[in-house]
Image 1 (spheres, helix red, strand yellow):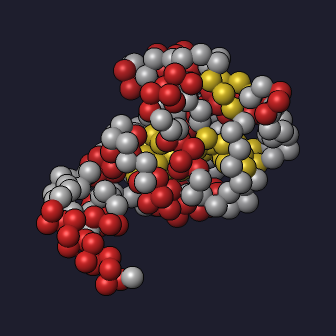
Image 2: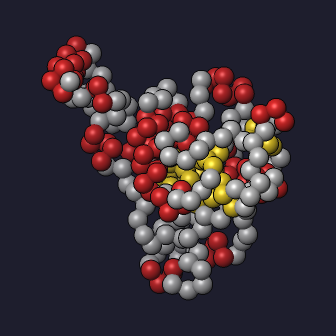
Length: 247
């Protein structure tokens, strides 16, 4: 098999010369997927010290030494989400890979992203009972062909349940200023209808999405799960827009 794969890679790279979906250089091993190994290896990943709640990088260990390990911003506000983690910042190579995955139809990238997320968020994923993907509205799901959050959730090694649904189509969060995003998704999620309803009462649930910007979508989903009796709600996303700089 290795010899056959090498032969296939050689033929494909010469005949088709497919470009890497992230950096655009010709793939030397196209049978391994649409992103080259150099791009996977160059993803910037979050490293400690991190805020125990939002997962943002902290300026120093000293910032994490007082209180409960949360950053100053998280200490000043309450949230239905216990803790959040991501692979890295929504920038550079990780952003390019996510764009190829989400908008370029490269659905197979979910495995590599999911495995990186599982590693980066191991402390959160350990012990949870259920992974719940953030749902798409049916119109957007129809247009895209898949829910990127659900594809990521498949690779976390946690039982998966589509416990939530979108009650209405909302404007893309990326098109809105930060202060308008909470209002945009307020009341936009609910438990699935009774025939396919998942009982989350007493369970430790992890919400899964591709990108967290202000956390508005995650918090709106978490509020529904908390109201349904979930014992704990955490969140993992492939990337996060870092709420910095903080002096």
